[in-house]
Amino acid sequence: MPRDASSLDKLLENPRLWRGRSPARGSAGLASGLASGYEQLDQHLPGGGWPQYALTEILTEHYGIGELRLLMPALAALSRTDADAGFSEPGWIAWVAPPFQPYPPALQQWGIDLSRMLIVRPKTDKEVLWSAEQALSSGTCAAVLLWPDRLDDQSGRRLQLAAEKGNSWAIAFRPLAARSEPSAAALRIELQAHASGTRLSIIKNRGGQPAVLHDIF
Image (cartoon, rainbow, N blue to C red; front, side, top):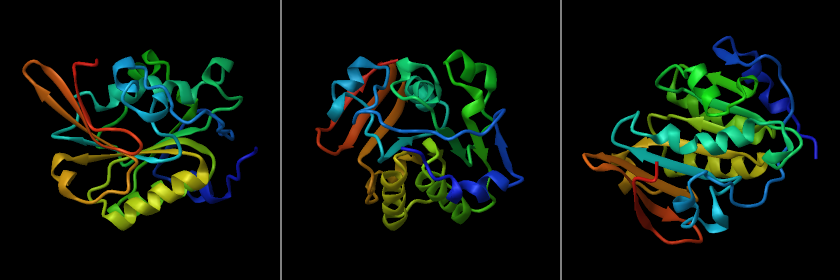
């Protein structure tokens, strides 16, 4: 089913936006559960993978401990145009307010199609949430990654509804301190780095059970 790109127009016209070589419309249609690329993790997720058309929260003590590596196999699949990806046309992969500049050679090594990348750099946290909501609900983004300073329950519910409306996957990165706050996310994962490796804790798992996994990557 073709996607309506009208609600993404303002984002695409934003001078603070970086995008790949040429815009194109995406199309969803994957089964529930997007394979993560990590068998141990998929075994604990309902549907055998990341919950699609929903909000996932990843809580970390600081950035750079593997949170992006955790997502790369799935994002690479969403960005591909080949039949093995499970759909005829990929959508955009939008990064909203990343705290770093994504490194294209590293993304390419993971199999990310850079022509499907959008990087949005809003000036305020309110604009971060607005941009993410618009991208999710537009129907043109396969996934939207965002780094909000704050994400209250109401804002989380808006992101969840936008993801459902646009058949998109929302991934919000938040600090560990947010663990005690209410969340509308279908899945909440906590990542912590230890001397022995990285520990992944599934602390909210709609349709599944909490779990603690060690050194999955």
